Amino acid sequence: MRFSSNSLLLGAVALVSAIPVQDSPRQRLLDGKPLPGKYRSKNPYTPGYRDPYDTAVDSIGKGLDPLPWRNGDGASVLGPWNRERARQNPDLVRPPSTDSGNIPNLRWSFVDSHIRIEEGGWTRQTTIRELPTSIELAGVNMRLDHGAIRELHWHKEAEWAYVLSGSVRVTALDYEGGNFIDDLSQGDLWYFPSGVPHSLQGLDPNGTEFLLIFDDGRFSEESTFILTDWFAHTPKSVISKNFHLAPEVFERVPKREKYIFQGSKPGSIEEEEPKGKNVKKSKYQFTHRMLEQEAHVTSGGKVRITDSKNFPISKTVAAAHLDMEVGSLREMHWHPNADEWSFFIRGRARVTVFAAEGTARTFDYQAGDVGIVPKNMGHFIENIGDEPLEVLEIFRADEFRDFSLFQWLGETPRRMVVDTLFADDKEAGEKFLKEIDNPVKDEITLPDIKNDEEEDDL
Image (cartoon, rainbow, N blue to C red; front, side):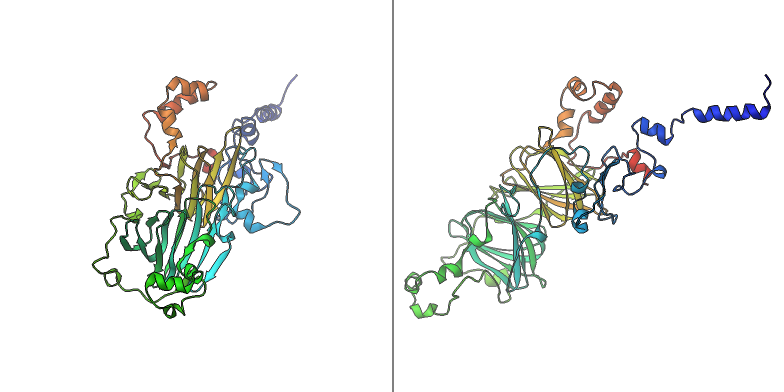
């Protein structure tokens, strides 16, 4: 049988076309590899999108509407749908494939808290009532206009605070009768132990805003001991005797609590501090300049830790301030001594909490949100946005403590690590051991590595 040259050429072409191309879309899928960007949808919330690595998606920054599609599974939404809420919680709409089991809600936004509006200011709170997992700590976000006063008061709980914006004057009286006055600005802290009477006043032309933390999740701003409230519920004959003045002097004191009110403009501390031979200054330092601390610089950001070691009076609250670069990761870790109460000041993040027993859940956060991570549960914080991420990690503890997964594995016998994680892939095990050799704790890490998914999107 004779074959023409054309027949031979056609046969060769057919034979070649029958051989699988090693980097074809079909072969990549058979090998468990993601498809290059040119072969798949760029929108992660579509049935054709594939991502075996559960890469973070910034739905707000990219203007996407999350839908429950993941690697071909799922379906569209036919019923009512809150698009804005979905954008804020993309990892609840389309959870990573690694999420599993039931975990109680660990996220709350202050924008969902009731605001109490007063003359010259407002306040809102996140407690165990708003967020049932906020067991150890409660938070209050408060705003005072220029000259507005949070009136003289005290609490059963200790009060820790971080100034978010503007400047504020704090006054207090310590257990030994010493008075304390200080002016604070953004990034500064104060701490008043249980029962210490104090007051706050906005100083900046635009006033101040701050985050208050109380060392009991059951705290309520409504349960505060307030000076005017006490006067209004004490017989004037008793007040008269207490202050050695005629009852008529107290005829026009407020009939109910003032709470937040517009006060007169304050002078300097030197002008206003109490004077007299029986007056003494407190020997305690109730305030601290957190952002003036020398930062611990990591590969992906900066960390500042404030606890009783450098702010001695703060016996029940410890905190870390994180500045995280775009794409960085607050490394996988856990806290052995307290629940983490996080407050997100700037940026967008996702956090996966591992609760043992095959259970994990991912939550998304943005500025103004509160996150809880129960004690000893493994977790990370990933900056998924297009701007730096600023976070406060706060604990009901006298010391900040955490365990680094990277450091732990790096300081564990190499054989045990490989037997546990890489028994079926010795080559990968060798790469892993090389990376964790002689480990350095890197609290905020920014690895110079991209997976195929990320490279295709560049």
